[in-house]
Image 1 (tube, rainbow, N blue to C red):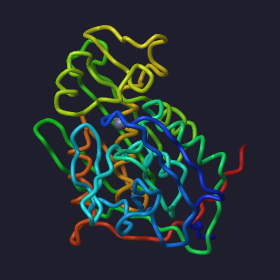
Image 2: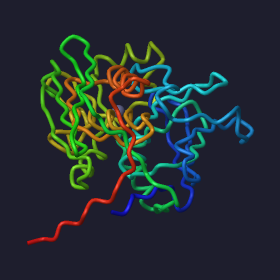
Image 3: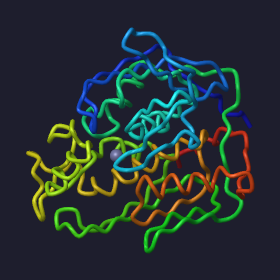
Length: 299
Ligand SMILES: [Zn+2]
């Protein structure tokens, strides 16, 4: 059986936009990197030069999970809202990248991962002469917070079941079952936008968050109403976005996770707590080299 090769981008790409929480212009440049380099962040200063040492986009760098996932470099600088970019990188199966960040945040684009994935697709994927590895569960791992939980169990596939339960009539409940190896499901996932309540916007802004949020980059709900013209992109857009956030956060494991994940009302806090358990030294997880799946002949 042939092993799956690691990958990077064929050419660099740059995306610019506003930061969802900071409200300031931000820019991110993704550059090709060599095999086994992983996903590394380089913070760019006002002078356009790289500042401080690069750091790995791994769970150890997470410093905050309120309304987004924040990473902190060794020099103390923080990069906010990494999850949608990381979700796109994970969905595109890119293993190695140098990510240059200008500004305090990754630009929010349209609130989903689609701009990032489109840019990655345009740049193209280059294979590298090293094997891609994955983390395979050998026993269940579960984290809980009241009735919220994330439970992972051993499975040969990469399956993700996510459920939500919001009091807001416009959001309500819902669940999706996704096979992360199926391109059809990934297409729905990447387009799902972030969302918030109209009533929470004021409090969020007072806390210094959500300053770049608008109807162009978030779904805003008010009780039973969706304020965005055009409504939802998908009837399951809210729960799909929670799934997208989870995929982005789980990219901080540094390798794809093989198993079945069930997530009940997940959020960045629970996602990161789960990852800390998964990546702990004693976790029931094996690292294995990925092999190409046999192509099934159509009957
Ligand atoms: Zn999100």
